[in-house]
Length: 126
View 1 (spheres, one colour):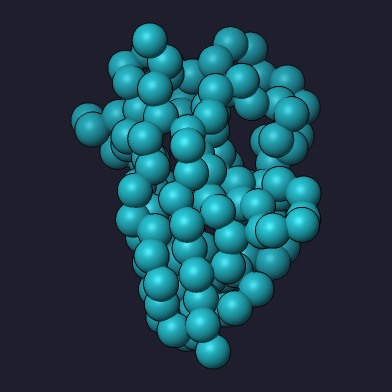
View 2: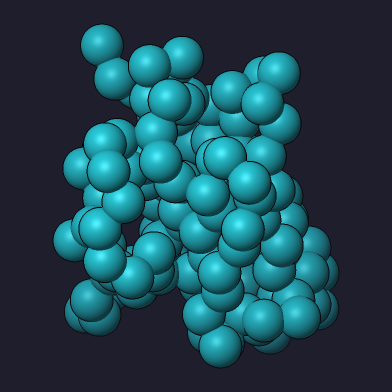
């Protein structure tokens, strides 16, 4: 059974940091790439960061470049999102996703992923 389980969300003041984790089942971790997405109330889900599991190439949304870092630990089947210098506009539900199968489309497009976690809430206050 394909499973993605996120953790690490919470509430933090602006300027603070959080690290999100996404634990993947071994099957899922055979995926082509993993991504982090977020969705704020009333807004569409948007891509934040993505990483190719083989090779480690990374992609970031312009809004998080220089502040967020995606990484992976293949020994733990886990993908991380280190978030620094958080801003109130980063407040959202954050989702981990996996693309299993051949790579298609831009890595930050939600529609190109076929497995999703349940999400973890991140709230940044002023």
